[in-house]
Length: 420
Image (cartoon, rainbow, N blue to C red; front, top):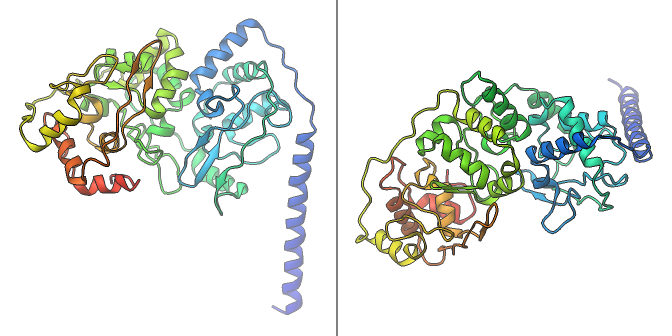
C-alpha cells in the first residue's frame, strides 16, 4: 500500500474517532441538562421501595460511615483498583435526579448510566439483571423521595487500562449475560423466593462466588466461596459447605436475622450486610433465604468426631495465655464478650484464611443487631511467629475434619496475600 493510502486510512480513523468522541460528549452534555424528574408514588409503594432497598443492600455501598444516606463515597476494593459507591440521591447534578424510571432500570440491570457510560461491575448489575420491573420501580420511587444531597462523586482509583470505560462493554458481552445455576436443589415457592432474594436482590454471589481471571463470576460454582475481595474471605455457603461446618436451618436463619448464633458471629462486610439488610427482612423472607441456601432437602450437618487437643502442649499454652480469658478455658465463649471456638464455623472451615487473619489482625468491636455486641479482639501478629500461629490454628482445628495449617500460609497472609 502506498504512503498516500496509509495517510487516507489514518485520516478516516482520526475522523471516526473524533465523531465518536463528539457523540459521547453530546450525549453527556444532553444528559447533564435533562429535566429533573418528579416522581409520584403512593405510601404503599414507598414502604415497599424502602423494604426492597434494604433487601438489595443499597446502603452498604452508597452510604459512607458518617455520611448522608445514599450520597455515596464508600470505597470498594477490587483487584483492579478502588471504586467508590456513587451518589444515588435525587440530586440532579451528582445523583439520579435526572434519571427516569426507565433510565434507572437500565442502569440497574445493564450497567449503563443515563449518559451512556459503562458502570464498573462493582455495581452488581450482573446479579440485578433478573430484578422485576415492579421492584426496580419501587426502589426508584423510594430513592427519589429521599433528601437530595449535592455531594460530588469521588474519583475512582482504577489504573490503566481498566479505567477505559468503553472496554467494559466487551466485558459485559463476554460475561454479564451468563446464566447462573442455582446453588441448591429445590422447587417449592419458598425456595424460589429465596433464590430471588439471595441471587438477585441480595446479590450474595458477588462476594461468595469464586471469580475468574477477568473478575467475572464463575457461574458454574455458585456461592462456593471467594478469596479475592478484602482482607477476609467470603466462605462457601452452598448446602454442602454449610453442612460441612455444622450449620442447620435454625442456626442459619438466626445468623441472617441477628448476625449471631452459637456457631458464628457476623464480621467485616457480612456484619454490614446483616445490620443494613438481612436483619430488616420479614420472617417469611428469612425463611425463604434459608430454604434456598440449604435446599429443599438440606444435607445433614456434620458433627465433630475427635476430642480436643490437650492444653498442656505448646499451642495449648498459647491458647491459655492469649485466648482463654475471653473465649473460655474450654473454648465455650463468653456471652457479649467473645464467641465460642469449640464448634466455630471459621475454625471448622476447610480454608483457614479467616482464622489466620483473625489471629494475626484481631477484630474490632462488633455492634450487632439491637443491643448485642462483642468486645474487640487484639491481634497477635507481634506476639507469635508464623509457626506459632499455625500451631495455634491447628490446635483449635484438632477436633474438626479441617486440613492442617502450615507456616507458609500464615507468612503469606501476614504480608497481606491470600493463604493459597
